[in-house]
Image (cartoon, rainbow, N blue to C red):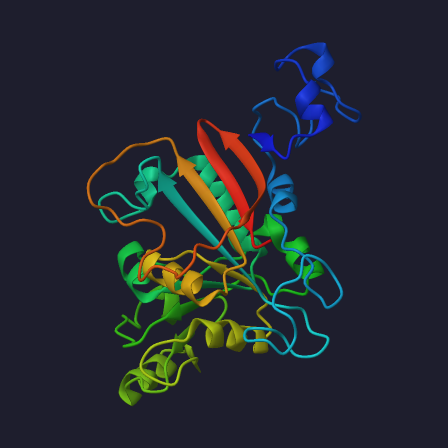
Length: 298
């Protein structure tokens, strides 16, 4: 793994891997630190530090939505921060043959696991749950101390966004999660499906006045449950709704060095926004030709 951006004095000055001058203070094996251009595999602790959520308590930077605004927190509370994690090929495909795994890599999956381990809740669309065979998030010993220090439980909850609740509630995601699975739906959802979800052990959260879910209300409802470090893994339609509603704070995008052609979805779908919203580049990592970028709302 190499850090390409932001460029530090260490990364700019380092000669090729293996040279004696490649050593930095505290480096005993010539392999460099997280900023070194040595291509070594980063530890999970280094990845966690690179992808740490910003401090969004009132009075800190960067600011998310101010108190009192849609999706903002109550007085004195940590503000919610919604991060998306997606993968795309060079020609813009978010999937191949209906799945994201074929365009992923081992490094991408390490980052995927790290982002989950840092989150309070993982928000995902019902279609993605069905297509990808979602399972409950698991507790990972490598992140136990970090989560405890952040006041988090052993694993993030999974929150499924669904209008019709057409889900198989016998699946492990509902029948045996470490943390109860959340269902985000609208007030007009069918009562019998809500009852089925609750009977299976899921917690149903109303986040919309009609059949569907209002993204702004979804973020607010999760924050009111204490989930302020939010991560969405899509799918494209759900990410498009978050983008269109203006509640997305950060995009972690893996650019896969592959070409697929075909008619695969992009990472975000749905109606176009009126005006494109520009995000600021925060960091870029590279491993085996895959680029791992991180963009934030300015």
